[in-house]
Length: 508
Image (cartoon, rainbow, N blue to C red):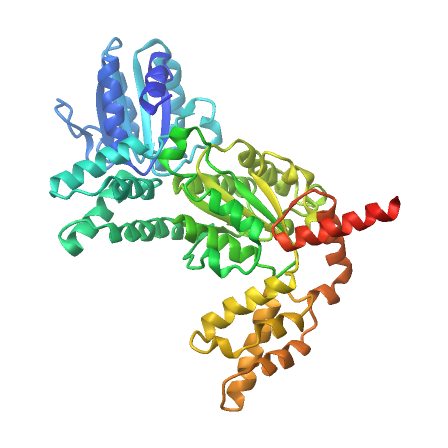
């Protein structure tokens, strides 16, 4: 049901006090006016500075007097069908006189075709008004609304874009208000005299500005590509097959939006890198959630922040929401002594994961899978759960190649990749990178370039996590072998299949 249809239903059902939280005041007022015309009602708009506006005998009535703004309804004939739109009225709801007057009006207007609509950029309803005020969400513009506005603006400037570029522009604008879309298009036109395909990057900058204002999510500029990931072939294939799954063509085909991934495994094996590469490869904004920021000292504020995070992620969709180390955030969720705050935050989050229909692709990473509540692992929360284990020798060689190609693109062939991979068993991708950086320090301190021997010397000084935390790693491997997750690497899959065949032969 659209906003106008739902509002019309509330008006006919004589919901006296309606609260519409939105920052798009102009678009909301236009929607209210359209609904009022359809319902045969007059609209009167009030704000603190100007009072009531328009062709009124009482123009300016209630100026700087929010109590008079409510008394205006009593000046209208009882049979007059009217809507009073009060801008920024949330600032006055804590006043005892305003609160009492609103509750009196709620009783009076049950028998009259009149309604009060409070327009506010934020939702702030005192507890004593909770039963008499109905909240109606005002959604961000739909794809069709965005397309219509973009085509109108481009036509006014005499600019035409190919259909493919127009589709990408409309998709990129999802999550922005109409006003922000106008601003970012005007910025591109002002820079070049016309809007160019390269100006789509300006839209990501506009979304980044929106995220900064919340201080809950971080906007990550993802520059890593799928090719920057060494190994993990099964995971790469899975991602590449879904590269166009957010397109309108996929919707017409009948495909649902991809839901997300849970990447479980040993630290330093490329889980975070994968999250960044997904966003870059799919040309989607990458949002990183620090779950610790959701928890606040005031009662109820943590749950409010969780809902705000969800609303923001959905508003900026399509996007990738990266939740790093989700196991640390919700480990032992039932046993925490925080008056149930963690359980409520977890419940809100896990319900959203299961029921969301918006194109928010969630990438959650976990190192200690045993500490996660079983609800997270249940099918339906994520499209797939991948286990990211230690790289095989061939994968270590690919990881060395990726790092050395980036650091020494002109002289990479001087390094013996096969020897490096053979001499670094049990090393993760992060430990391989650390060995290369340490080798660079060795070479730099001796005023020369670093060599294969320098890398091996540095590697000999590093104790891999697979040895220092052997029990934890073995527990993760046992969990992966039990078939509870799909293996991200073909080499790991082949190794485990070989072990299973040996165990079967041994049991015969």
